[in-house]
Image 1 (cartoon, rainbow, N blue to C red):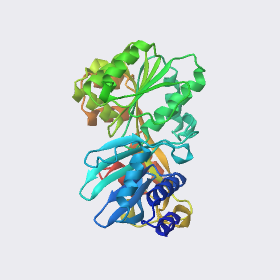
Image 2 (image 1 turned 135 degrees about the vertical axis):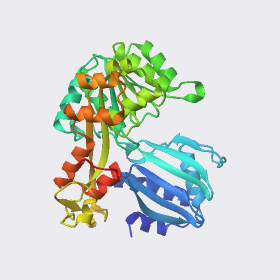
Image 3 (image 1 turned 60 degrees about the vertical axis):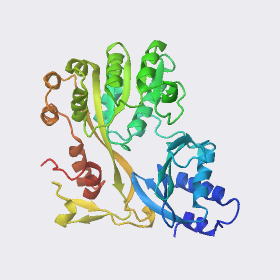
Image 4 (image 1 turned 90 degrees about the vertical axis):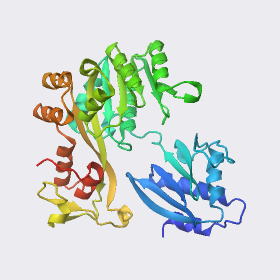
Length: 400
């Protein structure tokens, strides 16, 4: 039984301060555990509590039916949301979050009541610069050089939860450190996840017409030299982002895509002209986060089934112990691939609207180390397991 479970079990739902005590205990425990999200899922019998650590949801505790709605209501009070509206989704920032951690609350109506999800963002002092990200040496060196450029777009790609925003923040902190106020740095985010000294940060607000597209166009009139854009989601934002990159602005942004080459394919599918992609993109960095095996309990395995179809000669598998809380993993690492559209062969392929699969083949022939290459190397070195690679990259065919 976890300490949090024991703490919650001792609380009396009939007491007036029950909801406040539950919320305080859960949020403090989530910060201490390093959770990125806390899920409170209403069920027919109560409220299931889970949190996400190292990218994976873990069950934590179950609250009884009595008092469960008040727990969600207490979270809504802290986030300045309407407690009497339980039939519509709401979002807000939690005030006075423990540990000076930025927290945001999202509620959503379900069959058995409101589901609440609390997102916990990185705390102060975390991931200060590029050196803290654990990037491969050649990727870190290349990205460092790109940050000294005065124009072009650097796109960080990956699915939700792959650390894209963390990487952008590290780049911005690096730029602040290097330039000491001699470059104008600005961001347009949805939402702002952490305050960055030296960066003029703004947050979109569709309710008043401040969208990513309109905000970016207005931001370009603020004399910025470096612009960080939360995410490219549509054609208009993509066009404005690349236009900024082509007109003397270093632009950092994120994009939901499975690989570096898929970013190019999706931009073409959106309707972006190939010449704008070829000339506007400085680099595409695609990343995934995978859990590291717990060094205290992982064991070597010769069983073919433990390789899960991966072309590797040796593997280690997760077991679980007290040191890792039974998960078998402790911490995470990045799997990164970088596409350089400035390379002649890749540039010609983009201008020819080459499909994603062929473009990736050309990039590999030009020296790109793919996410699969790094994944297989990590398995061979015993840093992670085949099961974790399959969880992060899927069950598709791995390169031979």
